[in-house]
Length: 273
Image (cartoon, rainbow, N blue to C red; front, top):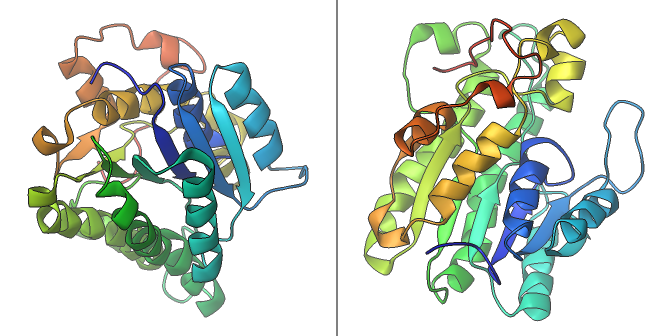
């Protein structure tokens, strides 16, 4: 495949951050984007809504379908998938991007927060995949891409925040298993994770504010890597745990300074690498 023109992408959490960046990159080809996210009203600390994202997607050349979806609720997922199919005629690509984070230890993690991370991260990944796969099976080059880390089973990634790590690795285990389950039926299932911290609202609000942002990269490095994956033949590219920088280097990209929030800054490596 050369581009994503006319393809329909169902993206969870696409109102901001990496999800929106992936949507806009696909929109430049003329893709259809289903924005499955919760935010419908402007929030002080969370810029962007499903409607402002839709405006940006359409300005970039795509078609947008903004749908308010709480990915913790199975009924809302199925309603959104049905609306996507009704509007665009099918689904070609699922991006499991929505995520919840709490970098807290065992005694500091309320069960309400534990449940949120597991509902939004691993349960929603499974539920959205389950809802979309019947439609992906009808697509010519179907992909599922989970924004989750490689399965690097080391104590240092579990000990400080075991609840969060389990939920993110759960997303990766979904890809690990589904890639084999659907290999013979032509659905590619991969994961993608950034090598460095990405400048998102979560980083701004939860992980250190402006100081961390200045040592981060823009979401476009991850969206460019996602584009490479999604335009590959699905039967030839499945079961991989991709790292954005490594993938782009393998594709011949040499200029990474353009992705830095502050060119020349010492970049912070992301978790799980």
